[in-house]
Image 1: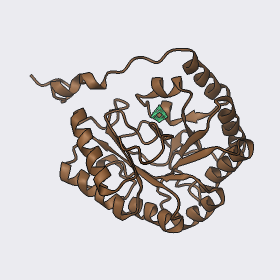
Image 2: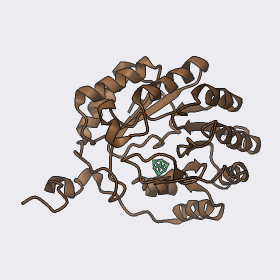
Image 3: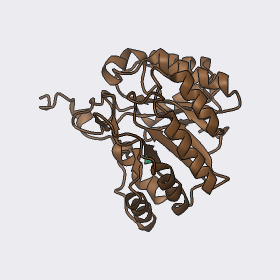
Image 4: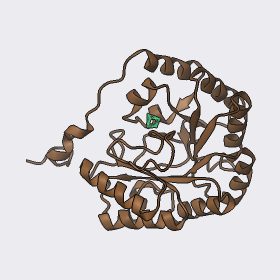
Length: 295
Ligand code: SF4
């Protein structure tokens, strides 16, 4: 009999390779307290990331700037949609203080989509980076930015004031699934942003990420990898989509670990200098690991 949710029984239960232990321990609590006491948002909690136990127990988190309300409504994401608040002028100092307290050497900074702001939020990224760098001169930065819908060129110009960093923008899924997974996005626009960034900053590593298990075909995934390489993208993260909330898109397929290994090999063959591929991989997962470590 088919389950009430419409999901097949094999999708109702997590396969064994997707079971993780509940987070606990002193360093986890330290990270949790530092984030909470400074009023910092993270994508780890807002996206209900399954790696939170591992990452926070290592003292790593991905900072979500510009609030926790997004102007878009992606089907895979659990971040709330609505009208966000104006950028918070205290945010750069608070993020810098978090980086100090967690003794970070590498920080990943992302944001919600801010289509309401003329610069898409690029100015706040720049202010946060420069303040963290002022406090911790040898910090390494990785950005995971929105597609800067109507302001790609000006956003890139603004971000030029905060170099260097790894420049990340996620295509998230294959183009045929954009209408249901990323209705406010545009696949070509995302590729264009990555290409513009690479053209503007040839020495900067660019990065993207794709989730599997939303109903894409293998041919489509392979084409996305090729499209990203054609856009000059250097780094790729490939992971399993997991439904973060009851309102989010359902998982269509759990991809077996061996399949991720095949994607890892193909991505390496296509010339990505940094590849992370596995069921729990997210764009910021082990982001601090250096390139040429092809896993
Ligand atoms: S993978 Fe990224 S988003 Fe997930 S817990 Fe780790 S740092 Fe946070």
